[in-house]
Length: 79
Image (cartoon, rainbow, N blue to C red; front, side, top):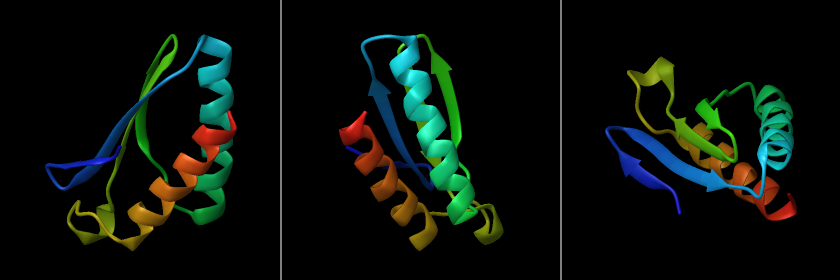
């Protein structure tokens, strides 16, 4: 589940291994590029932490963040 914290949508994802985590990140990268909205994220082995917010609106959550979070959830279900 996504959590709203400090004007960001945040979520952590865990995978069976690094390759699965990196596959997920690659698919998210293509979706983010297509939407022209990019996440702040980090990856350590099989864990990916993502934070979404919109810089143009003084670092707040917007419809762009919600749409990207929904697409990330769809990708996660496929991977």
